Image 1: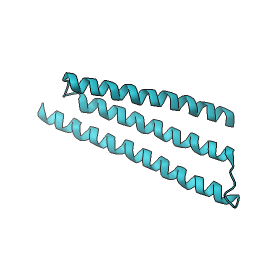
Image 2: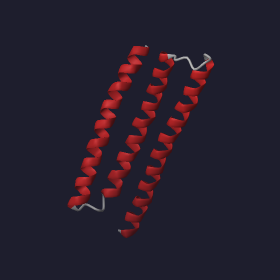
Image 3: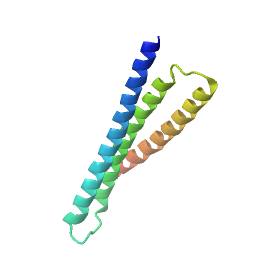
Image 4: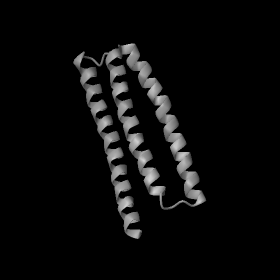
Length: 115
């Protein structure tokens, strides 16, 4: 049983790392596109449509990273089911799900305006 717990802990750590990497990749890609859009027009003129596309793309990466982090939290808590751990997990999942829900709605709204 301890072996399974150790394996699941390593898997959850790997999922954490993947979630953070997805988040960092999305932000790096967004920053690169932001500077590309801003400098393409010269004198840092604002192109709102392109900036909205960048926001939409970054939001998708944030949502994906949140999904990985929620899965990791659930796996981390499987074997430590005391009351404090369970309450912490519930609060984190509610917060991350709430953020994901409202961010998803905002992304839908931005993307609908684009289309």
